[in-house]
Image 1: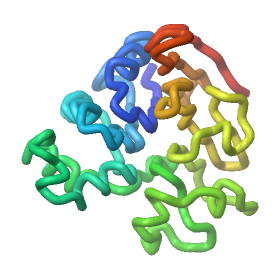
Image 2: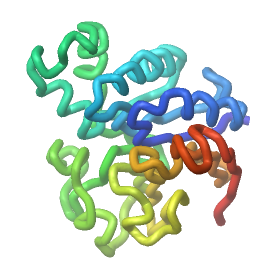
Image 3: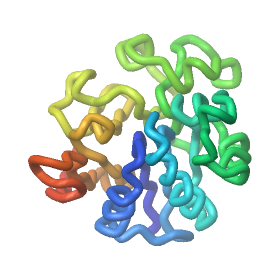
Length: 211
């Protein structure tokens, strides 16, 4: 059966993402995979993750930009220091800011409440925080988003956050917590540690579920 999968805020942890997709039994061309931005971080060594993201997209995954990718696109050649290729930059330029796939909206950070989808500002789509996830009101779709680590919204550290018509899946990979792949079809989460000391990098693989 085809599944809808999503992962956000990889921040250079391409190997962790690879292990999670393997654990979930991801099959390109059968499963739908959505990559929700912040594939990289400030350190240019993390930019190597772009090669894996491009590979996944070439195999059928769909991606949206995060604030880190927008920063990289806006950087000058000296800041990039030859660590990213022209092909990778062109790939990012062609990557959208959101994807509408009923019953979901996939976006990096969220949307501005009360604003039509086609009138949303790029700065909100890649950077909004509490004005989105803290807002009440019905949405015509379930917004699957990252950007704000879920423990800052109210979820236990390393776990996804669920609100009315909202699903936060940034479980703090950037901060040495966990990287999570969400199986939206079966309401399962696959996660691994991004702590390179205590639990070990990409170890402590867990599978949980939600109702």
